[in-house]
Amino acid sequence: MNNIRVVLAGVTGWVGRALLPAIVASSDLRLVAAVARGAAGRDAGEAIGGKPLGVTVVATLAEALATPSDVLVDYTKPDVVGRNALAAIAAGRHVVIGTSGLGADEYARIDQAARAKGVGVLAAGNFSITATLLKRFALEAAKYVPDVEIIDYASAGKPDTPSGTGRELAEALAAVRGAATSTPVDQLGGIRETRGAAVGEGPNGGVRLHALRMPSFVLSVEAVFGADNERLAIRHDAGSSAAPYVAGTLLAIRRVAEKPGLRRGLDTLMD
Image 1 (cartoon, helix red, strand yellow):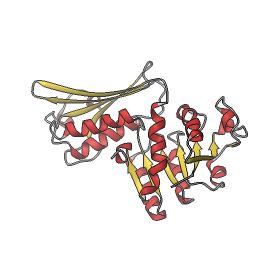
Image 2 (cartoon, helix red, strand yellow):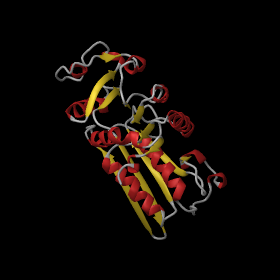
Image 3 (tube, rainbow, N blue to C red):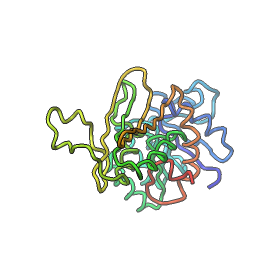
Image 4 (cartoon, rainbow, N blue to C red):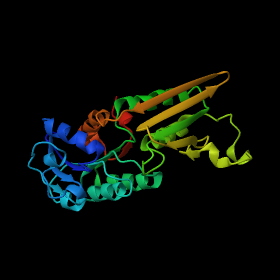
């Protein structure tokens, strides 16, 4: 698809501010609408502290979808991303979801709607290339070491738990890992909640995920594998800049239309 017309929802957010200039600078992409309730009525470029771009920010996605476009990119909030995705699909747009907080049932509804409309949806818990490599390496390790648990670190103010990165990783590992040797939670005494949540569905149940929320973290995810007398930890740490997520999101914008329905994870595009 050439000259892809993009709607960016969450343009003044952490990732949106970094993504907007990259979209504008891309010869094959064209920003046609931007959404941010707090910046409605302002030029999108000026709203993020840059030069005017000739695109006025609107308050709602419905207003943005009134402009002809090809792809919605959503970096908004967990409580609106599901509705945004379904509205864009209903309008015949492809969708790139960078917002975390959606569960398996919501993803299933999005997939069904996208298939019915013949549009593509690409959702990733993390659009960073290195975070995607964490998932790939962890899936390889899970073929050989069945005991794995995830530690999910984020800032004290993150509004959802677990992170999209942690959830996506746990769901992928649950589908492929063997039976764990740890004592089943329902056989434990004490405070069972301290063993974390079982996330994902697979032949051997979900993967235990433990979420930490405290100052000094942006987003980190660690997959810890345990075998007899040895351990393997594979970890990704995000810095304070949103720049690592830009390249992956641009890749998703360019390739989301290739296949109808929902695809989960940037790794689905990397090969």
